[in-house]
Length: 100
Image 1 (cartoon, rainbow, N blue to C red):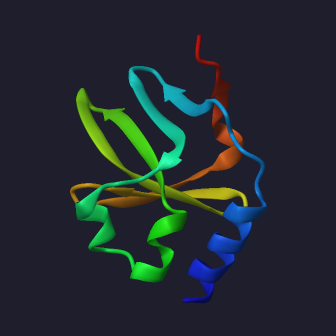
Image 2 (tube, rainbow, N blue to C red):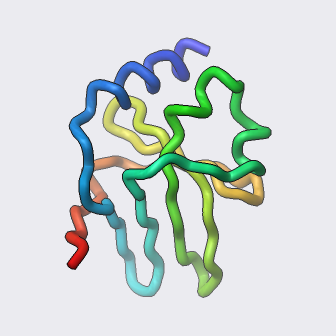
């Protein structure tokens, strides 16, 4: 519970991202979007009071496309995929990818 509160506080303290953050490794990529996450599947896994802090994400892993949500906690991005799988990655591993 404390982790969710800290995540919400940190997310509100972060400046607006304006561009996507992307982590790539070979043919795999995770893209963190700076827009609200509207995944009903993920929302069902997260307490209601924290849902507004979730941001959208997309990923291509092993040739498959996934959608989900992410939230920043400290120096990590916690990822929750629509299929219920979860993971974490260092925010420092993501690079800004400017939109044209």
